[in-house]
Image 1 (spheres, rainbow, N blue to C red):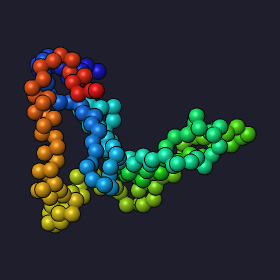
Image 2: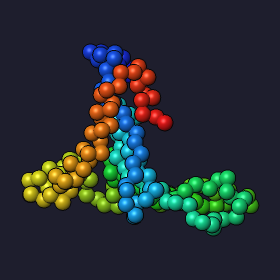
Image 3: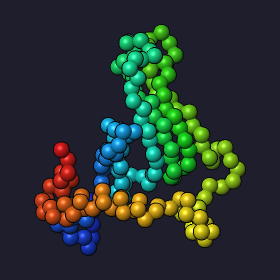
Length: 171
């Protein structure tokens, strides 16, 4: 698949943002040192929206040290699209005499649990607009705070004139 700058009618020197991967930290006591990762882009392999919480390592393992090489962190994932489900991934000992752990998933799937059809992507939001329900919408101060975080990055990006575009904001 051609890159964005190789597309027909696209300036080969374009600096249009087509992908971002960012790591944010919230500056308060509750979320101190907890990274929040955001990834979004155009023409990715698949369209998906999910929230994943990766749990911190415990101070001690429930499994013996022999399992340390195969240990993976537990995760809780809320998938919003293309399929709505909630899954928790944790470690389980593989059957047998060796101490080998594998990640396993417990999944709650809306489609598998309920007979009613899942709403389309914006169906719920449009219905809320019609009914005047603002529960799922951002307040003005939330939008302003989001732009306050993102705007300096966009402004810095606009000033860059390098051809090493993918490397602009890497460490």
